[in-house]
Image 1: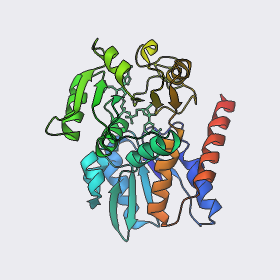
Image 2 (image 1 turned 135 degrees about the vertical axis):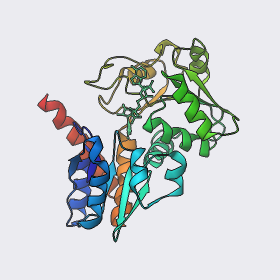
Image 3 (image 1 turned 120 degrees about the horizontal axis):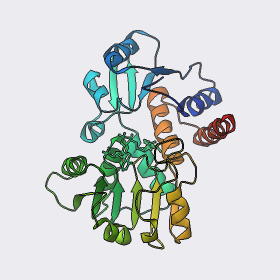
Length: 282
Ligand code: NAP
């Protein structure tokens, strides 16, 4: 089950169901739009029924923590859960977003985090997972830039309480230009560039600054080629969109629920088909 609000265009049901069907598991992945006041009730409802668990998405990744019986230490440090696993009537929270992000970064883009520099744009739920994942795997220095500076500062402080090589800046800061030019990795974890969003067609910074040979990672996965990724390719940088992250965080959740090895190729193909059919309907 997917719990969030609203739940407009999620493709998680398509690729999770494809995985369940592929392994002939008699289970259904459903969606449950839950308005804010009803989150405790919705999570509590998981305890009684025949559920394996749930995914939790916007806007509940942080608040869901408060309504679970236990939280995996990694999810607790990140401060957000996207996966709930039911064991008897006990609900445990996990965060598979960081795994999905880091695994796609290393395995699909061949990126070596240790000793590389990174600029992370955004300080919301997706950026939190990325920041903790990058810092844990040795990215240095890590700069977190956000429209609202206070959120970037708070995230940088949480990732590296002693300061160290994690710093924060406002996205509007003129010093962002030099950080873009020097970064081995640039990650967009804002919603800028997302199809049908308020900033469709836009990029989060002046794309002329992208350094050839760097890696530009856009967590946005619709469109498959965002303006940022198109510019990165033109600049001679490597470009990776967010679809692999989405599928790999889902595959890790699937494994936690079912204790079976997830059919990742089946899930990736189903996610592409779901996106294509959404596009065809518009
Ligand atoms: P969120 O918690 O709502 O955070 C949104 C972030 O975008 C905040 O940092 C916000 O800045 C920034 N932002 C929004 N509009 C902006 C604008 N016009 N200019 C500058 N900054 C702007 O959302 P989220 O869950 O972190 O998701 C962020 C993006 O990542 C979304 O596009 C989402 O689809 C994508 N995502 C992808 C995956 C994946 O698996 N590929 C997983 C999760 C999320 P402020 O703090 O200033 O508001």
